[in-house]
Image 1 (cartoon, rainbow, N blue to C red):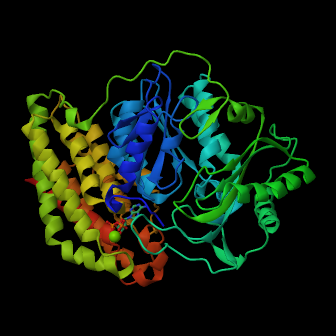
Image 2: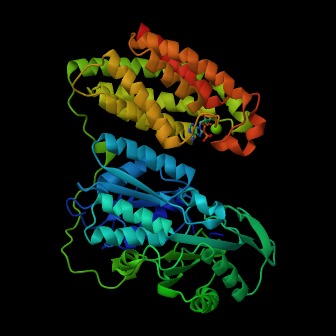
Image 3: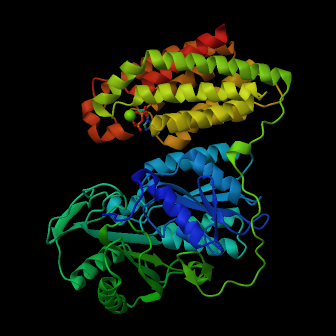
Length: 571
Ligand code: ADP
Ligand code: MG
């Protein structure tokens, strides 16, 4: 449990403040997280790494020369919001683009993805690398769909060193994926962790047992087994990881491995060394050479009792970057070359955002956008109870509320933007961000992305003609597909959005309002049809079969809003 706290709600923020206060030579606090105390050299890609809090040293502890340029810090075990990611990137990026690195979890994928949409529309080149080293979470053929655990350390260390040695964004992205593809981890837990302020751990493991395949957010293991001796545990970890060793003598791999034995929170260093004694024996028996092995705490899960083993199957390039110098609060090796690192003097803050100048016709278009968003708000409020009811069948019952909060936030932000003389593009970009922030949840992030992407099609210097409106709607749907990754048949809003988009394409030579109204009818029928099959994506997939007989709430709300859009544009 956590002995020292002021209030559970402030815990994560206060921990970051203390970290920065303790490392003023390396870190500066910015809205949403931390960045290096020195400026990013002009044109150098920025490596922005993150995720929730509760995992120190991951992620803010790895910001500094040779590794991360910035880290957005979410709440305990929850992804930073898209605005936090955006803010940290705006502070870290300096003309070389940005590589966003995070563990492969749905919340992180959505929020980092949403921030990426917005940044791309502002002309910043953004690449994404999701770490997926945990072999317990998916099969070897689906390595990139696994979740990320302690593999965050070597992947971010390697790509950070590559950037320090001059890699551009393409090169950094390539090396990051290469490092991720060469990294495997497996962990076991002896007991669960307790959130600050909570009395009970998130799960318990029975005395004398251990849970195989731990997660780092209090997820229990995949199955329980008898807890053996330290050597037996070491053998189990080693056997699991080595089972995925690539062939030696191919692709530059010749038995040299980066090895990380990671304590999750309450396993003591001496215990880890006892385990490592056996790991070292097994490495030698297998003819493997451990390259700069690490034994300690790297990716923790509050006070979880657990241990994981990570190996990176190295080639010369990965080894060079793995062993390169690094200087961060929690990870230091070797001596950084003495290059000048000018101190950061400015901090970008969203409060100071200027509204770009807009022409009269674009401002007129922005006013129409406000009217549409207000109509969305009304329709969501009218249907809030019904959308909540159908979400409760197999989801968590918050879809009506999420849509109401989101559309209300978006309409408010759009009104504020118009009051400040914003054009169409800026108005929709701000509305999209507000929707995601106000709604939360999966659909909130997706609708936020849709509005943001649609906004990117408009301009602040031209009015909106029918063609632009249709293109913007299409761009919004493409963003949902890209970000959510759902396919037709998964039972999500995509089941309404894809037939809608196809119908819109067929009708695209008529007026925008009429075309959208016709396509919205197709969307409505498609949404109703989702009642016939089980959910395969999103929260509802766990209870997928329960959802048969009820349409997907996100598909229903999508059809409602497109009907509203068609009506508004026809007026
Ligand atoms: P949450 O599931 O986080 O509680 P909501 O209840 O607001 O979020 O929204 C649920 C809806 O989100 C689902 O009905 C589905 O239409 C949509 N959804 C979930 N996952 C995806 C996805 N990957 N792509 C597209 N839509 C999705
Ligand atoms: Mg829900």
